[in-house]
Image 1 (tube, rainbow, N blue to C red):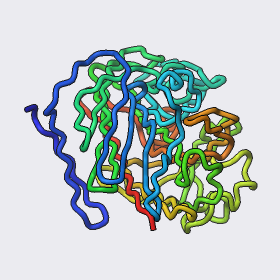
Image 2 (cartoon, helix red, strand yellow):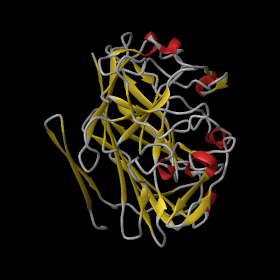
Image 3 (cartoon, rainbow, N blue to C red):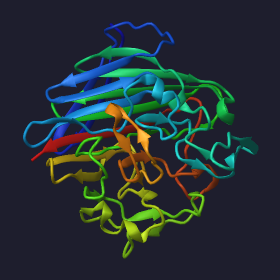
Length: 359
């Protein structure tokens, strides 16, 4: 048995201890497969293409199971996906303005895959590569691994990346994203790009979902969604979700919908902070989210247009809700934002914890 890794956190007064043991050996091949974690009424399926979460089955208040994440029936469909359904995005999630940044006096040019800017790591970011499966225990956890090479999409240095999805208790899903630069300093900002619809992936829009975001500030953006460098209060604006309210209650006051980074209240670091609570009144489902990251991107799928998904469901504008915990967008070009630079010998650690209930 390989050396055990321990990760603990204190959430809701409970001491959570996750033991990841490499008790099963898996070949590091480049074949694409799907994998399912199941415990109690919670069942989550993944593919090693993009380390994508393809489905998550949850009971409603009456015990009826529904798949609450948007996605596709076949793995091949994810290869042509431009919406990043359920994927791990990186090496740097979100946007890099002008597709360039300076680090230690050297200018790096990244792949401009969204106009003049870089989005979610470039044309072939981590969402479009085949990950190896390092270990897999169907009622416990799965770990995906990817070795990113020096110069990939313009980013410096070789980086080893691991993503572990873990079931905790009967109603929690944890995600641990780790990365280690091997030979050069480099920016790292990974994110999970799952689209949630707690009524069911095929049930229409999410405008009646209620959301609470424990974040009192945002990082405003320009017309190309690149941060201006400011950090401003949400008070008196449609971005204020400090108290729970329906997503659609003020969405018409915004151009297109919500697509903004929130500054999570408190100090980012080793401890998990409660970040968001989402609830859906018809099914009674509720999702709570904790993270150790400084920001969370609220995105209301403003750009979805007639995408044919699982079971021939058609996903349209506002069909799903993304809550992408992350470092601030374009941090590499704003010295007042928390740094995303990780040096050789250092480690990047990003943790998310979801708790699902239905009442």
